[in-house]
Length: 153
Image 1 (spheres, one colour):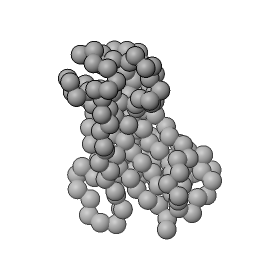
Image 2 (cartoon, one colour):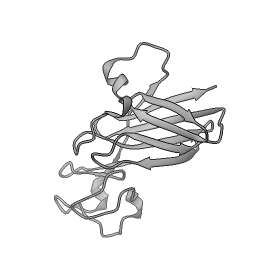
Image 3 (cartoon, one colour):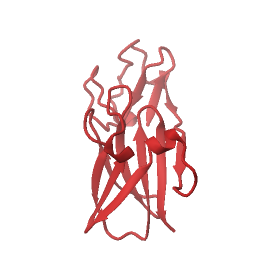
Image 4 (tube, helix red, strand yellow):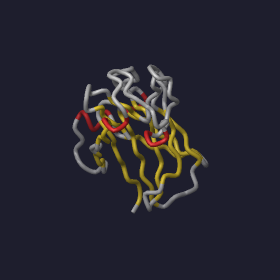
């Protein structure tokens, strides 16, 4: 989740390491200390509001536009491993534009596992695969929101 400081437009992103406050990656906003303040303008937690993210659904069966191709999860199964790569493993991985996580969900949309990626790390992850008959891959891009691809019925 991402939270916007309505006073100065600073964004607290749970999936990004906060170098200003040195808050660990994946620290949820509600788990921050009660006296947390915006590191830019010093406003309190009440000044932050959740940013509702746009989810882009990719079905792989229609013509994909360039932006969709850039975020399309390529899937490969090798034995008991599910290998997911984004844009053939060459999606940008910069401070300002990168894949911050890739997640595997079951057919009930329950999170099985989420892998967080660091800057300069290839956007390729492996999941232990348990022969799910239906699953979804969620790709979180720091610039282009969330991309989902459903596999199976």
